[in-house]
Amino acid sequence: MNETAQIAQTFLTQRELAELLQLPERTLEDWRLTHAGPPYMKLGRHVRYDIADVLAWAKEKRRA
Image (cartoon, rainbow, N blue to C red; front, side, top):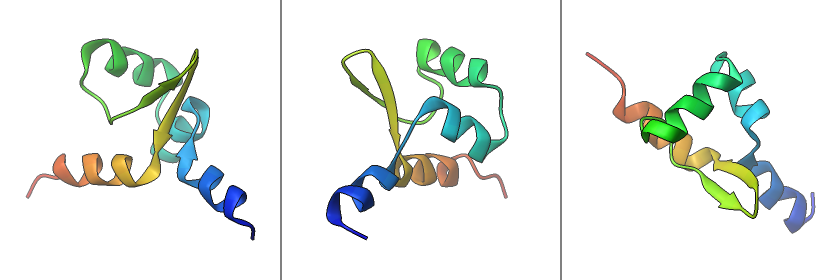
């Protein structure tokens, strides 16, 4: 796998993240508006999620 393909796999679209978390895309949109969800970046009008940031955010949400 080349370096560009490896980098592309670390960034998820809203749809990909919604599928991974088994949530509606609308939930991710709401979380962005309220700053309640995982960190994201805007590249122009495109939203991307770094999988490492999402996993760290999810671990912070764990309850014992």
